[in-house]
Amino acid sequence: MRILHIHPSMLAGGVEAMICATAAEMAREGHDVTFCSIYQPKPDDIFWFRLPQSVHRKTLGKQSTGFSLREVFAVYRFIKRGHFDIVQLHGFFYYFMLAVLLLPRQKFFYTFHSDANRENFKWDIRFFWLKKLMFRLGRVHAITISPASQKSFTELYGCKSALCENGIPMPLVDDVQNPVDKARITPDTKVLLHPGRITEAKNQLVLVKVFRRLIKEGWDVVLLIAGKEEDDTILQQIRPYFCERIQYLGLRKDVPSLMAKADGMCLPSVWEGLPITLLECLALGCIPICSPVGGIVDVITDGKNGLLSKSSCEEDYYQTMLRFLKQSREDTVRMKQWCVTSFQPYHISNSVRKYLLEYSK
Image 1 (cartoon, rainbow, N blue to C red):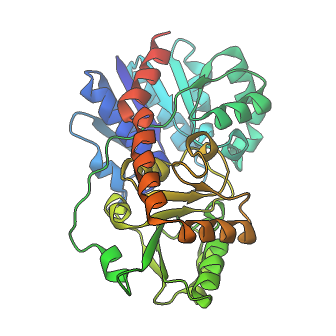
Image 2: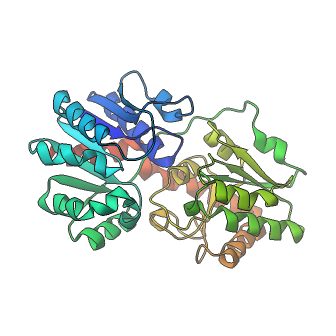
Image 3: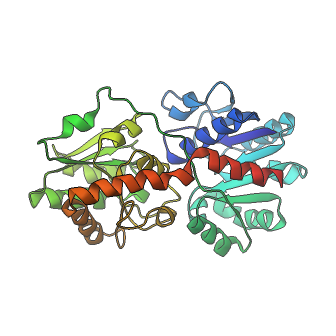
């Protein structure tokens, strides 16, 4: 099959990681795969450069941010001329409206990488009625990434979606200049990693408040925050908490290597889809401490392959961190083993197999 994946850019994020892994695996299985970036790639578009040579890379060269009618027509022309069997859409739906309306024989699929309600912003809200019609008529086939995501889609759009859980290849790690080892203040220091862009969804203000509280109580812990700054307001709110035991590493290209060394991974999110970082965490035997949102609850069994807080609020996440810090060494070893075991269904080969099955229907 000739398959096109199209997305605004390939910045460092879970959606972009998933697109990169999916496109690469489809190409590995012998399909003719193209990825198209609407924006002109930049040096920090990590996953653009991680796409293998087997995936054709194209860009429409958009430079400025914001709505552009020019790109709406550019996307239409690119898809029409490409003669693709499948066009796989990822977010920013208004770019694709013209192509969907004027290319009735083209097969379009749209993956919801989060709760369905979270996929509608600005221009997308204005076109919501049209999106809903396209899904109901089957002009665009919806794919959701977890049972929770699927439920949110059905409730919002009133029709069914295919379920193709996120997947990843086994993460690659190295030991070169790993800041986790440097962060250990004593041999018993617990180093926790928070991999996530600085955004409202990731709930970093609650996270640093919890760790400041733990530090004041004498717990030997260190928090490392690794992610690109997307919301400067939130960064300024959490900056006063930075110290020897709460460090901001900025954008990192080696998150799996950090996870492999960390004692646990913190994800107190307000909302999520099915985080790629969570799957990487499980694959590497790093214990996740998460809030019960999105597809996280479909993957983590509290007390078995990770810990789930009652909510995303500060007190509930604090109590869950205490549970982590107080558990025995035997429980920790057992939980790490369960993490690795529970990753197996989320290998990228399983995810791609489900995508290809939907494409062939």
